[in-house]
Length: 491
Image 1: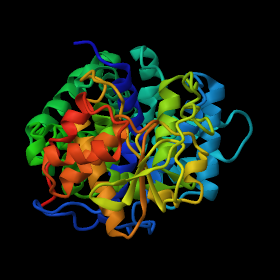
Image 2: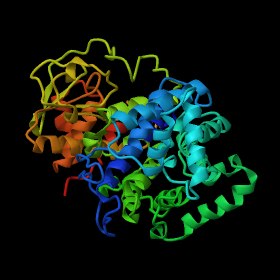
Image 3: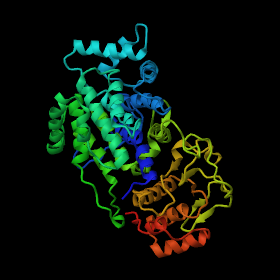
Image 4: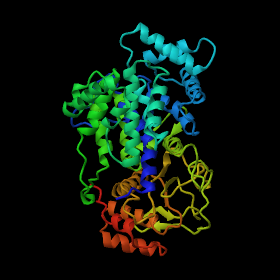
């Protein structure tokens, strides 16, 4: 069955977001006691920063330096683009780095000196470092490479060339470049085809190292994840990340039991952190690939709500950079994701109270009525919408939900409906007055209203009937409406 463009866009949007969430999950446990077998990692901050809860570390900070360039559509095999990334690294090291690896610090410090192109200075410094240190294939290039996998989605050779070129700005050892080629190609394949494969890129490596890498990948697939510790070496870091993904079972789709295949993203990230040692880096590496395969819609709202980091960015900014990178630096025909507002026409009408919770309003993209203190948007929104002005950034949540009956358009639909309903419940538990809206309150808003009622324990027929009374404009048919009725009540 052919893929759907909306699902492919969702997967592209998940790359930086998945990486950042893995990073923030791993931060508290870096070179400390990792969670036990039955424990879940928490974004509680601390670590080497120290970091705030939900804050990403140098792994994602350096990826942002790359993404600022890739999101313009720049060709990373071009010296001008590499100069821009190199300049970004130097600026970050001077003004934004909350933590920085020893090798990267040494190379960037040396690369500040001299004349000529910044990228050439950094490459020369990386080579000089490698000539003085027998162990220079650290994981500092691999940790930031996932976004490179979005730069040439239709061209695997160009992706590989870009991955190695960016890696060599700080890590000259061929193994570091190899690991970035393999992981960037895995991300590219995941976005394009919704499947995991690290061995896919072996033919992109020099022939003399392919068998060695094939063996390392096989070890990652067969040995216990705990084997890959310590993981500061780029090979071991790749093995740890890959092991956490392939050793984690993919859950069955059983909405009535709150079981969804895309929970694999969360469970694999917890597995990555449990490996221990350089936990934020391993989980960041894994997160980039997990986000590429499962999509941004698989990242739970509770994580998207708190994730943030240098330079004053949040989840929406990561999605924007990923989407623009995948689109060659261009927004879509409606101006999303960079437009200030989305032009949906006039759908102004008073919001309706949810039939089972009067502090939850159900409305359109241009509602009238009381000002909410939290907003859950079920349609694409601009970056400066009047609707959310004054709403704290952590209290505006956007759900990736496509108004389409094609099963391919919303591959994580059951999870998104349940997760969004849970977020509404969480916001209400904090005393927030919540607006849930889409464009015209005809399909997505009524469906999430039913999902929230189900979360509260209301039977499906009662929930659907009550929502239809509250929203006479509801379509009351179609896949979203039907699947919302399957959301499991909260335990």
